[in-house]
Amino acid sequence: MDESFDWDSLTFSLTPTETMYITETEGDAPWMPGRLQPYGDIPMSPAAGVLNYGQGLFEGMKAFRTTKGRIVFFRPEENARRMQRGADRLKMPPVPESVFIDAAEQVVAANINWVPPTGKGAMYVRPLLMGSGPILGVAPAPSYTFLIYATPVGPYFKGGVNAIDLLISERHHRAAPGGSGGVKAIGNYAPGMKPSKEAKADGYAEVIYLDAETHTCIEEVGAANFFCIKDDVIYTPELTGTILPGITRDSIVQLARHFGYKVHETKVTADFAMEADEAFCCGTAAVISPIGSITHGNKKRVYGDGQPGKITTQLYDALTGIQNETEEDVFGWLHELPQ
Image (cartoon, rainbow, N blue to C red; front, side, top):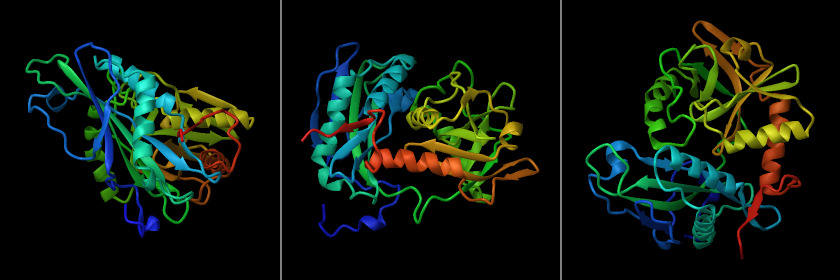
């Protein structure tokens, strides 16, 4: 890395680092520890299961350089467990938590100079699990690859946290009951690119997806989880198998209850959300994105004065404070990079 690297220029985009981790296994054979190698292209059969049938999963997690001079991951065990659940759903051999965590630690340690200074961003760590062996019929691949690469990313919101404008999608759905919406399957994401691009062309930041059965209940915001607040009570869509169990989502639920707020994990109708006092979405990338307005058909709901709400801001400050170690890690969420 160039010593004169301009950390302030970082955005949430790919800045390739030098080193990645990779390991392979055959069929149902146990995973063995892998190896570090230079970041770069990997050879793959044109008949690879992941290329032909989408047999693949990914994770997203962050490592932070904290105010105490430590480098920490935020709840990486939860990412490992979520990938195991996804592997079971897509008929891939789950990667043991010990292998997953060790791989993440190795990648960050190997690229340690790319971890941004405190407050300048974080290192985004991307694990991938895929059916890399060749297969012609629709069936599990004969062999699998697990890899992790990492990239430094800047703050999702430059110049402070901004409220975003969202559009409820009338025609598209993210997931259906019995499908793969509850795991981080790679195939969940490409279908969202068209509605997202169309919404952005109309001036919105992202789309809100409703459930595929009744077309009335909010499920996710693009690739993020949804929350709204009414009379100081917090509501978020319940995990019914069509919503990704976000780790940031779970952290916010725990934090809010710790602060004494009531949190209801339940069905949240679009009509109810548009009568709420505050709304926000959350995920690894932005942590919390305050919602300034939601448009549904010819109705538009503006929250407050279009600025982040009081409880939204409190939760954002608390969560980022734990990640940066300006607040006490009362839940034991931080996992320090071994020295």
